[in-house]
Image 1 (cartoon, rainbow, N blue to C red):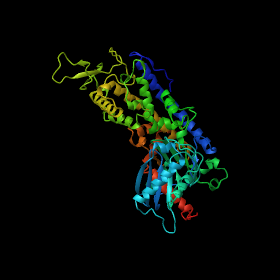
Image 2 (cartoon, rainbow, N blue to C red):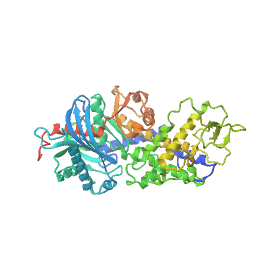
Image 3 (tube, one colour):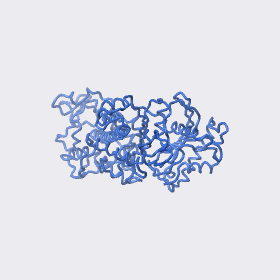
Image 4 (cartoon, rainbow, N blue to C red):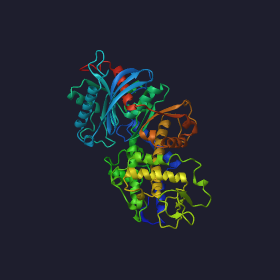
Length: 562
């Protein structure tokens, strides 16, 4: 991790140094990753021992994982982002389930308005679902109420399976008059105001839900671990109750055994002791709705990677006296807070995909600094003394070029194959379309190469940081040693990790980069036993499974007055 230098004195002969300096700020070597993972383990220990730490290590009071034989029909309410979902989940008892669902958009006004208004909207959405989807989700047998599990993907201090106080809001939410209040009671009060025959019997986090869902579909052999890498980030795992010393002399502590812990690792290193902050990260944090909170989440989650990249691109565009990117031109999207979505980064990376290994600069004739291109932009030099009817043109991508143009970072090749140039053309088309440039001429192929470079820097750093979180859980649960090596008495079977989230599922090479960094942290033998499996609708099915467990523990919970 390197220190920054100001983006001034940006001339053709200094632009490469500026870009190289930025690249160094985003690079993480093995020593950095070990230091980060060690800090993770320290914060795990603090959170397990005491309440009110940023890494909350929340006891969920879920004391096991399902094996796939569970049955029943339940409602689930999932609040965790732009949309809320109401689901009906039917568990078939053979590792499969049937899901019916409806999404309802949560307005920006509701996200930051009064808590009562937000929870009234949740109740109205459940009412609308029950009205529009007549189903078997009705009171069963002697029960008076319909069971519902709530997936609440925000930090809470959970004190029972159906009780938890809101600690803070994330992901753009900041509902007024809600901090410190029981989220289940807020929802149940709204149901009661609407006279709905629905009982919220279980509270669950989306990460815990994904863990339970993956356990249900994969079977009991799955180890209790799950990670979310999407709009936000979090992790949960099955911990020895004896290690959760903050439970004190509670009945749960006396019972012993295992309990799922919701880490809330999005708040890792809020003090920024080890996280590799850059000016682009600092700007994001300063302008966020929760400065100095959810530090780790702001480095690795899908909600923020696009904004980090936008901040980087803006700095290059604003460099003086000569802009380094887009000739200093901007667009409304680039000028808007969160105007560059992480999905655009994914499109840029996808546009670069498909280039074969053999299509590299190594195949170019040694000493040749130019490559053929049919790009209309490549008008610098026409090959030969006379232009043919359909001329071949060449494009210089040479940092030593005598042309008066800004240089790229030294990590980029000096020459590009035709396949690579075609990929840059695709990237240019993405940028023109998604960022709103008026003409393809506003984006040079050099601009396209630098944007792709910037996206790769931000995403690769996020993947490496994500691997530190997974490695910390493996070490904490005794399945790995930091740095590798054999753990005495450790189970040698597969290590199942349920995963969910748009980044891990869809961002090009993100999962592969996580696993590559994980190998360096825990060793080849452990990394090869780690099996990442997608958690199918963790938030919906997990909430249903928790509702089932609540009913088993308290059979009368669905009767009026209980």
